[in-house]
Length: 312
Ligand code: SF4
Image 1 (spheres, protein in one colour):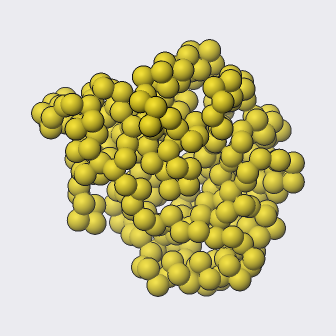
Image 2 (image 1 turned 90 degrees about the horizontal axis):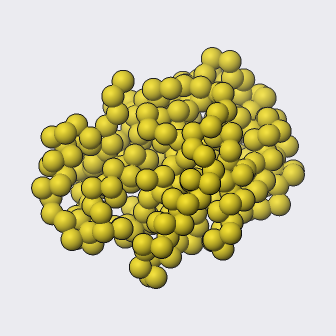
């Protein structure tokens, strides 16, 4: 299935995820903190992943199966990769709007200097762009972009998009211990973001298992310092550091729910337990998915998580 959840999102309330990138992860970045692992297909080329009508039909069927209490607040493009690599994104958003639920896109913004990408994002009601740093050297270390990319061009694209877009624009900055969390870095990042005028700037630090095991979340004191620096730059800043809760949507098919959610969103042990309960399934399905090599179990910061496994 292309859609999954809905899952509780710290930014969007109840969000029905739309994974518009086919299995295997296509992204222009390979962020050291990526929760879905290293990028297998690093690319900047936009392409067709699904036929737009099929994607819209999949979402419609999914919405039809949900209990009324799980009607999502947003339909959110949050893929196993970068959603703007999908050349049909704009058309898909237009089709989804017929369901009378606002559409959100969470993008790494790496392709936003292209007019076609901005035009596609313009269709969405809510857009969040990733700005982890404005320093080229740090950007290469954290986001590990495709070689042909240039941070200055991306940041220029973000500014153009911000000046054109009439929807709800947000930014997201992932703070990584020892990478982008020193005073000078934070001042520069905050200054740039203040010029983009986002409705909210979200600060987060890895709470789920990252692509590189050595990556550590920043200590609480540093998160607060970053929050103060952003606030001093007149940015409406919020922290994305709390656990989202275990309120995950379900379809009655535990096998598909687990595979679809873990493709983009590691499931914490307690959330998995709740999902199994809702789907009237038991833990044998989890053990069977692990035995088949479809998902893996991982210990991170004292908590157990389940992630999708990909070959390659
Ligand atoms: S965190 Fe997002 S932008 Fe970074 S590699 Fe993962 S999918 Fe791509």
